[in-house]
Image (cartoon, rainbow, N blue to C red; front, top):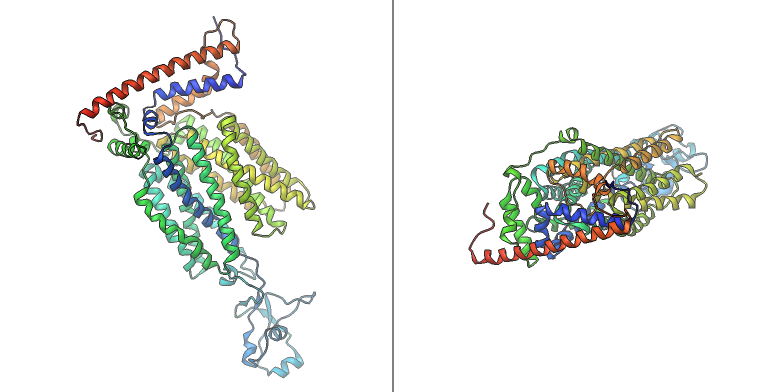
Amino acid sequence: LWCPKHIHSPSLEMLLRRLRAMEAQQDDKFASILDVVGKFGTFQRRLVALTFIPNILLAFFMFADIFMFTAQKPYCNTSWILAIDPNLSEAEQLNLTLPREPNGSFQTCLMYLPVAWDLDSIIQFGLNYTVSCQDGWIYPETKKRSLVNEFDLVCGKESNMEGVQTMFLAGLLIGSLIFGFVSDKLGRYPTILMSLLGLIIFGFGAAFVNTFHQYLFFRFVVSQALVCYAISSVCLATEWLVGQHRAHAIILEHCFFSMGVMFLTGLAYILPHWRLLFLVGGAPVFPLISYIWMLPESPRWLMLKGKLGAAKRVLCYAASVNEKTIPLSLLDKLQLPGKKVTKASVLDFYNNRHLRKVTLVMGCVWFTVGYSYFTMSLKLKDFGVNINLTQVVPGLMEVPARLCCIFLLELMGRKWSLILTLFQGSLMCLLILILPPELKSMMVLMIVLGEFSLAASASVFFIYTAELLPTVLRATGLGLVSLAWAAGAISSLVVIQQKLTFLPIFLCCISAFLALFLCSLLPETQDQPLSDTLEHYSLQMRNVAEELFTKEVVVDDGTDEVTKNTILNSMIQKSDMDILSNVSLQDASLQGRGEETDPLNN
């Protein structure tokens, strides 16, 4: 008897993975149709371009709050003294009506009690009784209009700034839970349109709010629109593209997100008013209304919902754009097992063991990324770095970080790329929390390198998670793990304010160690077909982790070289079978063209 040996050769593992992918794709009728439609033709390139454009605006609306609360130095409004002498200069007015600090500067939240004296008496005797500001504040040293001086968020109201962050993250939490489920129920196309509508009304509309509470509500809703688009667009790209094209599209989509951060920073530096920033930066969202006519639905989702006629129409349209023709015999095979609509619910994340495992592991990873990223951002503010630099430098670094993922994924696969980038990011976060604050230059360097690594892990995470989840619950699963990211961000806001200095370090280490350990338990998804139904998903999850080391290959001496030759011969045989199959499909297509048969009729 021959017993399979543990194989260590990287080249052999790659051959085994390719052979396994070829076998799996024989049963994936949808992947076969996509091969005929064109793996990355004009239609797919246009689809990818359409998903790029909104990501610039996503970054703009997501980080706009950073420039809404620029530091302001307020003084109490003491215009009451101008009724006594309207010719007083601003310096004279402040000198007569504001108390001073021990260092000689004016106090910001106190003023002298107004009196019914004449100006000579005020100058001679001076004012002695102080009260809090009664008629609002003035900002004589401010050059830009922000939310701070618009709604007087000073002198005890500064906590409203944290309130905006909390409200925004709460919107991400709720949006992740709701719109992931909605995307799986209604489809990718309508949820993307809903998200764009939310950006138009509540993103661009934030420029017209009259109160700070209205601003909070608008930011709460726009955060839900952001996570709605992020989830649905990744699902749409995942289900339309195959192989390396899928990874490249999602990575480039995230690069445009980083470019949106730089776009926001440049506008905020130029424009002097926060309302003008929303008007100019949010105006490009209106042309996205054209997506109603330009954006396609996912044919995988249509097929699982029993809308086979619509799925065939979309596929035929894509083939026509790519100047291809789908054989009728192949198109007729696009049927669900038993011709029944596939049903799934949120409860399957608890009932299905493999789905529960993937969700918990990826939730832990996303919590670590969210916690580490926000911790670094908060630490960077403590060093007094210019607010524009804190956005431009990470934005510039994130583009090459995400592009490096293209080569990393091809060399190492999804799982080990995620482990490597997550380890680097967590290590940088740990060093930032351990190093003394006196090493300012070293700390800033660690923060930049940490954000570089975490940006890469975020891109790998989306690709890996989307491929691990089945189509029928892909958006819901992405929404659930996005909850963990928001929870990590909120945890960083809470923990960083605690007096216990070891607490941020402890949470960073624990979450990173747990995430890295759990990631090693997941199977690799590179070159694997997407799972559509829960039945196929459970079967694939059981087999894919074991197949690499249990492949029964008959060898004489058990050497790697003989195993390679055996696998290569098997691959050549399968290639010949594919050629014969394609020839027969082409013959069937030629015969089908002679018949006036409508392939779209269900």
